[in-house]
Image (cartoon, rainbow, N blue to C red; front, side, top):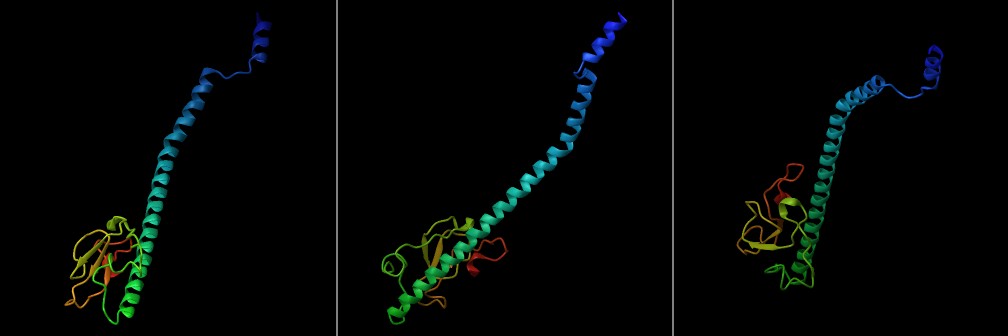
Amino acid sequence: MGCCRKQMKKNNKGLTLIELLIVLAIITILGFFAVPRFVRTIKSEVQIFKKEIEAKSEEETRQNLQMIRSAISLYYADHEGTWPGDLTTEFGSYLPVIPLAKASPLANVNTVTITGEIPSKAGKGWAYIADVNSTSHGRVFANSIAKDTKGNSFTTY
């Protein structure tokens, strides 16, 4: 009997139940600390990515606004000091398609609201001042007082 026992121990290359439980406990303890840290890292990466996307859309909004303003200036020069009445009908040869106001608060639309004053509330798209009595006549703005990622109002673009 004693010789058989020695042979069984020499040929036994597997793990015992206690050894498996210890390994499982170690993996569980490591997972208990690692998983929350991994989740926090993923969440912060997603937030950074969202901020980068929003900053990019705000920059595109600035560039699109500059494009509209340049086209308005060309119209003004060609029509001997007269601003366009609106930016849709008589303005097509200067800017065939109104570019998008891409920033989130502006709703990623290219609608132009004809107004008599600088926007004073949250809106969508662009605001064009067509009132001849306004000191800002002929100017175009991002149509929202909402703040961008830097804390500036979109109307200051």
